Figure 1 (spheres, helix red, strand yellow):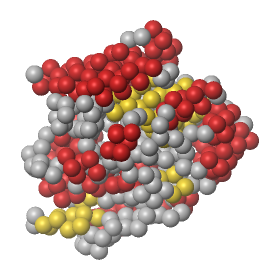
Figure 2: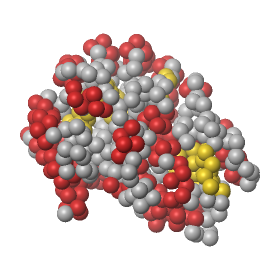
Figure 3: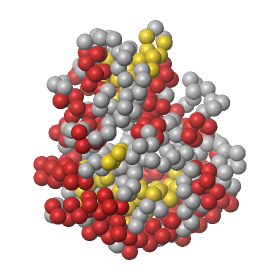
Figure 4: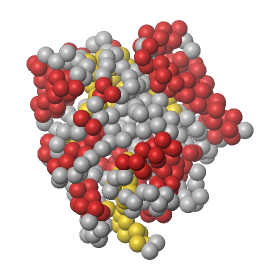
Length: 458
């Protein structure tokens, strides 16, 4: 609960909308948006006294979520059931139940699962037979068979935006910056057909790419603009550019509606997917920034992580994006287990050579649900593992580089990239006074986090 970026939780918004269709009263309590610490959050939950408390759990949040669940289970004033979902519980349901004492886990996509689960929990009915649920009884964990993926994403109701009005959130969205306020996240698709070894998306959504109708996506955006005053959209798809014609159709529809907004792609797109036609349509419809997943620019890295070999893809993608006057945010992963120190230094040199406007730089983080985690955890005692070790800013040992070497190289990359006049000027131009409480904190944590971790380990 020390987030430096805070955005309306789309996943919870969708689940809230589905639960309302089944006549349940729902509240979204976003601790980071309300500047709550653990103690304040626990007090609020006990005061609200929900029949069912649901929390979404990315791996980086697992230590604090585990603390919250254990505290609530030990509090005689809290009598509700606790359900966990998200990428971490989906990948590790047995461990999550054992370590937290939660009542149930929803694995993967939740819209078909959560109404049946809430109905059972509120009526003290058996959980056996509810697809997509994991639960425990007398220390024995039961994993029910998976629920099928939703074929028609347009059948899902829009998120319950009244429970998370974008204007009530700080101006501190995904990847820190925006141009206008308020900002709302939107997805046009779910899943990704690719299998990058460091990515946990397939563990959550499978490798099936499912799309929404572009016109219906713009219907939702128009609703956000006219009802909720939204002035900027962040598309958060795992695979936004999977079909060029579809993106052009989406952009043309945005232009035709004459909506006064801008938009960005903070979740990143594949460098070999951007085309001049798509970029032209994106820029015309209000896109001002494209995140590019450069990640593994060299052939030996691409082979290691399962990316298609694409020589000079990053350079070509940046040229296309900037040709249409959009900014570029490059995403970099430094120090794969096949990299030598010279490989990482060569990557840093490339990072400085390419004319990206911003960079998000991290080290490999083996996330549960990814292929990398399977290899990382093979000989690991997960019962005693400190999950704070999983971080994009905290290096771990690899066959060719020690964690201290990786940490030093990460620090070098961040400082060399951002301590340049062009980058400093760019950051100052983007920063606005109302963003300082969150974005200033986020920048400080990002630039100092690597040193903090090094000091902690020394």
